[in-house]
Structures are given as C-alpha cells and as structure tokens.
Amino acid sequence: MPFTQLRFHIVFGTYWRRPYLKPEFDDYLFPKIGGKTKEWGGIPLAINGWYDHVHIVCALPPALSVSKYVRRVKSQTSGDLRRTFPERLGNFRWAKGYGAFTVRPDDMDDLIRYVRQQKERHAKDEIRPWWEKWEED
Image (cartoon, rainbow, N blue to C red):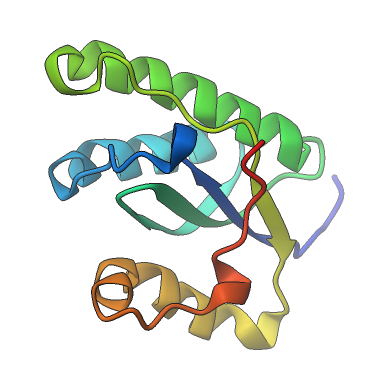
C-alpha cells in the first residue's frame, strides 16, 4: 500500500459563473461532496464556496487522479442538484474547467480557515486571488 501526504486545493465554478449556489443549498451540496470524497477513498478537509464556485481541500488516494476526481464530483453533484431542486436548479451545470493545487503542510491551517470563511471573505471582498483561480473553458 503506497503512502502519500498529498493535499489538494480544488476550485471549480458554475457554468458562465452564474450565481446558482445560494446558501440554502450548502447543507445539501457540501456534505454530498464530502461523502463522495470519502466513498472514493479520499479525506475531505474543508469544503465551502460562494454563489458561483466551490473550494475543496482534500487528500486523494494515489490511484485516483485529480482530473478523474473532479470529473466524478461535478458529474454526480450536478445531477443530484438538478434532481433534488428541479424548480430552482433544473438547468444547473458546472463550468468545464477547474483549478487544482498541491498544498504545503505549513499552509494547510491557513487554507482550511480561508475555505471555511468563504462567505465572510467574499462578502467583505477580502479574497486571496491566488486561491480563487480556476480555468472556466
């Protein structure tokens, strides 16, 4: 069994950065992402977001590539959101791209705190641009 200590910060957005992700959906979406992460052998460390994007800090098993993980999370959650909230999210979809970064152990506490404070930071426009990057396609 391989041993790794790789931690990832993954960011992806809604299609056309539409503000679909109202706070009322957080209690459904974030645990769903965490549960899928665990189901696939990963460890969710922090999950949060803003109206148009999601941040995930996690450890992934070596056999699961970041691209496969993101593809699975986006596929399963978009379908789940459309089925569970058809009247409000019937047309929901994620943008094609994403950002993924490895995280130094010394930066983990700061990053986890940052992700957990997404709503407060965005509301005050106190974001850190280097932790908010993703390719939209």
